[in-house]
Amino acid sequence: MSIPKKLQTIAVLIIVLSISIQVPFALSEETVDTSEVLYFLKDVANIDVSKYEPKLVTTTSENPPELGGISQITGQYDLESEESTINVLFKFRNNTLCYCSITVVEGETHQVEDLPADIGDQADVFLQRYQAYTADSTIEAMRSTLDTVDVTENGVKVEGNIKLEVTVDPLLTSLSWKNTFNGADYTSLSLSFRNGTFAAFRDDRSYFKIGGTDVNLSKEDAVDLALRYAKDLSWELPDGTKVTDFTIVEDKIGAALLTQPREPLMLYPYWLVILPLDKMYPGFITQIMFQVWADTGEVITCTPLGQGGDVPLDVLPSPQQDDDSMPSMNLLILITAVATAIVIAMTIVAFKKKRKKTKNSLFL
Image (cartoon, rainbow, N blue to C red; front, side, top):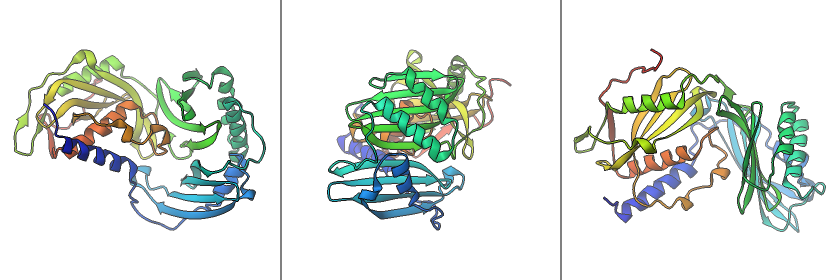
């Protein structure tokens, strides 16, 4: 069963728009001094702002509901000199600079001082300056992990509760220090370098907090619970047809231990289980997404998802450039977003479960 090219195009457009467009929830007065960005560029990112004429191009202030009402301010600076022009995007959350990226439009960036060519050494200098800038003593432990990895190739190193992930591709080298407990990743600080120089920074530790780290549900138990829960799943099409009979390909089931807020900005571990179906069922349904809290065993959701056709993933924003990503979101989440968007494009309007939505715990 193939999907018409026109509907595939609509699906891709929905995906791109849903990921790239941010709609302010509620505008409010600016509560931070955005010139703090210029101090960060000079004192931490090693950019000599004194040689530029900075221009604040735009700012937007809002209070996104997913952030529990805390303030968020985003904006852009343009820095221009006779020899160089760069664009700077920034974001404040909870009155703290949590994201900054630069794009060199013309020339080369004016540096405060010459930095080592080695990316690992540059990252160490950045962290040292950031530690002084924030007075955050926990950054010292992050710096120590740089001696244990090769930043020229992909790799992961865990020391205690700190996981350093290195991702290298032809355009960017990214380093991400994640607070990890019992196999689940929580808050993080990330750096990216383009062509051997600083390109982006993100730190969500000022607003996301660790709510709980207990993992009482194993991967095998989560998959077993997903299979049992899916037995009572059904979905209804716009014409009233109800789909109740489907087959799960059990040897292709995927599961990942992730984190997300259960209370505003408080992260807890949960299992994401993807149950692939043996074919495309009415409503373009090809898989079932199951989520369950890893500490309590309480089911979050069990949802049929549609995915079909050849969606050109190269039109999607790079995950490395997505500063709004939730902690620990991986490829499974991206697949979920794609699948959900395609379902919307195909006008599937209602999903139902036979079972009443109640607490379903493995521990009861």
